[in-house]
Image (cartoon, rainbow, N blue to C red; front, side, top):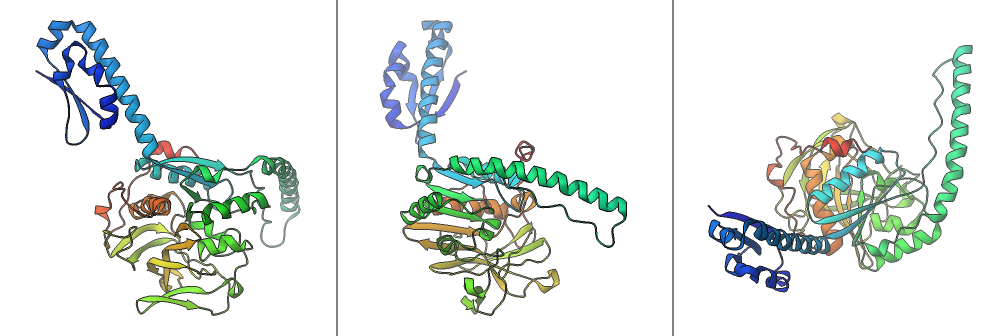
Length: 392
């Protein structure tokens, strides 16, 4: 009986190493199939002729060479992603590894993470009402401990910011899972230049809360929330009568109702990110960001969700996926992804992978994860491995 070994390989690499296959008349047993795979057939007659030990040593050497060459080629073919993280009002220590897993599991990306210096924790909240002497003493102890911890972290962070300087230009796309301290001037200038010159950018959930005072960043993300944003920051985006409408009504930018499942409705079915996805599909439990405000320049809405007043929503169709052109760069902005529950949603994973590839290349070729289970009736879930969740 024949034993068949199949290893993916590039035809150029095969021709480079074909001399090894010809040794001991192995060439007659090697062949490239239509899927660009090397087939090595081992039969009893061949092993008797050259000897089992010699044959296996030779086969092992050739196969290892092929595998190493193929691994190198596959790695070179993948897009390079840099996740910027390290500060967030969400659990970045859990969320960023999940994002990394989703992208790498698609087999389209290699992913690095750049972690900024740590931010100091928020001050402990005092108990409500009139404090008893015991409560007052306990709170004072907590405040003292917090002040000491805060001072230590701020000192370390001050030094850390002097050395934190990711090289954005080494990557095809930068993904921000960051909401925290304003980056130093030099880093911001490098980042603006990177996107202007064609670097891709992906904004996930609370990353659109960041940097309300940074003009260029707000132009990149289109709209954002919180951080003091208001009508001076720009309009809100509404979807009415099949088109985007800018709402300049005064008020704070950024709100959301209760976390719940909600329908996502495609508004640009021909865009590469959305093409082939259902017209409507239910997303896993998440925050539905609403009343986001910003410059909204060169912005297109790909999908919206209705913010149901029954869930403390606005009663408006709020933008869920957006693309923004900034210089030569492409930006994909998703408001989804509050935490692990939301990120387990198949729709989040599918659109994150597609949006990241599009931001990097302007095209979508990736087929994993498969969106076929998306439906309007039930939120499709693709479980996150326990090993990923344990990294927090």
